[in-house]
Image (cartoon, rainbow, N blue to C red; front, side, top):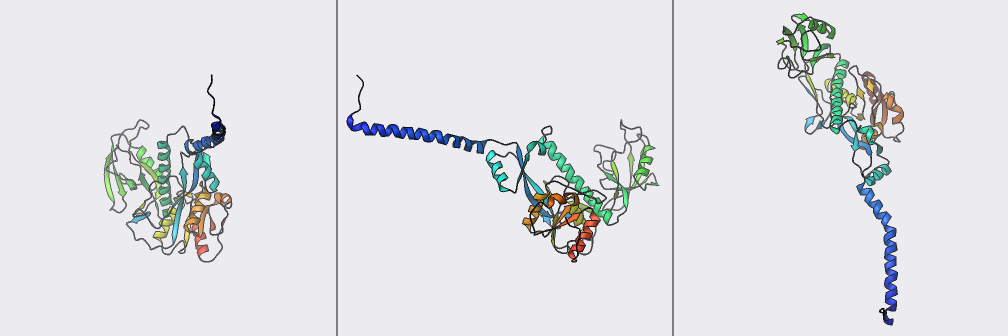
Length: 358
């Protein structure tokens, strides 16, 4: 015979059953919320967040060193700011982080494959970005020296190690003569080199930055891609100055600092302030002839500059349409087509005139 529930427990039993049913219903209702919460925190999305990054005054210091260091010639006093701007990248985002950043309106979510192509390793991408930044430093120096009318010279670059020129020449040496014959340009230098043979000794007269002119003897090597002597250096026609220019910013990639680096070099080597003492920020890659090219992330860089207090922002001419999409009235958007026009625009602005703007 089955046990029966005593009459005095009838109400309790009904209550327990009802409570259990409510708990079960609540658990079922909360389950999707709990699952969604786990997804927010644990699931990684295939997107990268791009947003405003750090900004650096190219007239100032970073980590205790001048951002633009010039040695071997007098440096003029400067004032105000010439800030380069950057874009931040956030990778490995959870679903929750991505939604928060997207909802902020400040960050942009882009497919990860566009920033980190799957066919390239992260290390290869970082090396490529670092190489671009180094090229931007060289281009910035050449553009500034071109603007300042320094003459061109056949300049050594990228000494092959091991190679016949190691310990004989250095990056930045200006080669003036080969076996006593002057070399006015790259074409003349190449013609003389092509007349040599592997194993032949040649004499080079050169100038070195912050040093006295010198002469060196080099025994040419052999390379399978040519039948003439192998010197083991890269050479280019570039404006040459007897002093050194170094750029001291670490962990920055890409070419977009070029314009601001060039302006800082010129400001430090000339009398007066290019910025008129104002807080000027900007961006743009530059080639050795001073032509300014468009860059990515212009809107993020503008927000960085505005947040830092800039009143003038230099915009590559081809980025002007995108720059105008940012609602702001705190900065003058000065159009930058080339180095000469940009400097003239800054001078016009600081003297109360109307320069070309976006």
